[in-house]
Image (cartoon, rainbow, N blue to C red; front, side, top):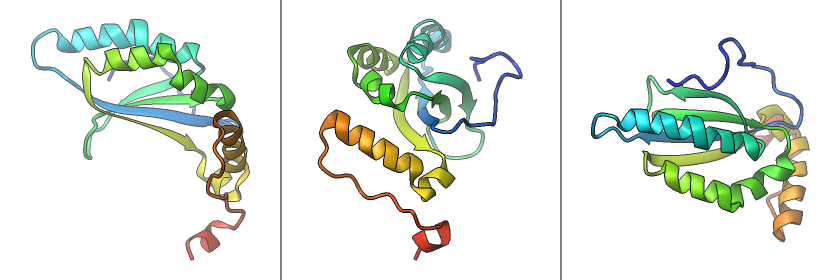
Length: 152
């Protein structure tokens, strides 16, 4: 696992309105030096670009038990309004394309805190934001029902 934050700086607290942008992948290591080249790229190019587009890197995790992918890059975003345009921009497109030269099984997710999602506050705000910015006519409605009612 590669350190991307100062030791002891990882915080479990999540500010209201924060979403996570998590990316997962497997590093390709077919020949000596592959992992070092991957480290150089993510440390000096990819992770600084994520910070530039507003994704604060909380940590890079290695999956010890479970299916692929084996590396999870946890990012946190407080400016949801800037996240999607940043991810759709040409800089991130080029950086992700270059990342895929070093990794396989790339996946990504945007996550909101579960309790807020159930109450509907963050999901409603994000739905409105995404609809306005990308002219989406309709997103599934957010539920204001408690968790026990949602599962019925």
